Image 1 (cartoon, one colour):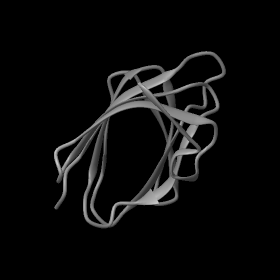
Image 2: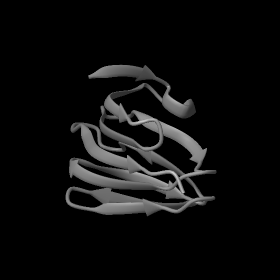
Image 3: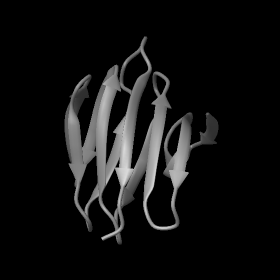
Image 4: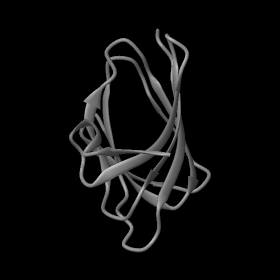
Length: 101
């Protein structure tokens, strides 16, 4: 895994293994407690997140919702979101697929 400090303007760092085929991205990411991925917009792509461990908060177009193990979250093209590990004790682990549209 590689470390990405303050990923997209977030807090702390994202640990991730990223795959890119020149068009689409897939990543396996871990956010430690208190870490986040900053608010960003999907201008030319969308994103599907699969939460595989832990829990946290997602903010989609300004609306905050809890996320947890087993949940799948979708951010459509043109929309904004941020992912936060709001836990004080457990890592938030996820897979993300970001296909161009």
